[in-house]
Length: 159
Image 1 (cartoon, rainbow, N blue to C red):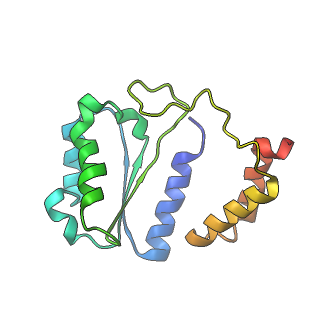
Image 2: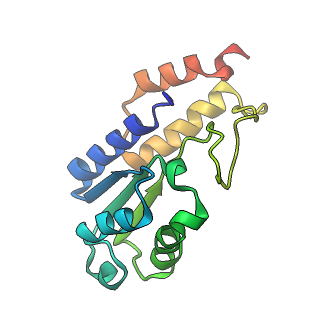
């Protein structure tokens, strides 16, 4: 919680719509049942037999940790990872899956809570270059204030 993940996804969504003319569907995932999630996707035109009809479409899944339960959500994840992943949707449909990794989420395939979140070998300059490299791809080159704030609150700035 309070990592800025949802805020970042909102910024990405706005950028995709405004600068790239993309169709963006952002779903906040809650444990509401697999049928409900698949129905929400279907209502947005994202279903297996209609994937070829999509153009410049982005599916942003926020809080994926809420639906990690493989028994309850196996068909959902099969569709997201396998059906979409094996379809010919290159340059048509893009999927962003965002999860809070600090939660001790039951059934989560990944648990990073006890790991240090900073790579010991990266310098402030390298971190800045990394941000700049990714910012260029998304058109965020002018976000110097954000970069300064990001570096100032990280463990990098104290080392």
